[in-house]
Length: 162
Image (tube, one colour):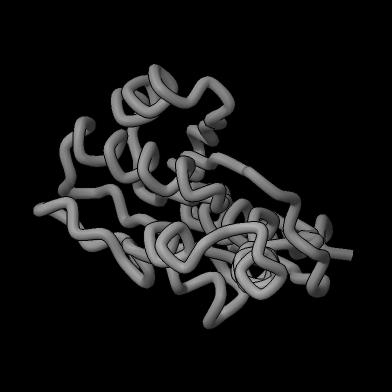
């Protein structure tokens, strides 16, 4: 639940547009939902300004899809790191708006555009660092940052950093 969603809920309650019972029902899973295999933190975005980020490694494709589906139902942005193509295909079955970044191994579902925070540079010494660098860069972008990528800035590629 985002701050704006909570504000809307409280305004509807105080204005009489919704009943106390309906407000309680909407807050039933606040701040988390226990899926048995994962506890989904719906309160994180309200507390920190950032959505929950799912570490997908070690989870089944069904678990990843279940987590993404639940979080998307709550109208929050979802980011999954260390995801593979099978996980993405499983998520995409129920969430066709899901996007996969194969080099970064990230799945993303954006329900609302994040507010631009700041500029960040991701710099690598060599091209073998690109998967980790792309994971950092894509995550930063999905959290609302503008990212400049400088790859292969090691000794052999130092001329490219200028």
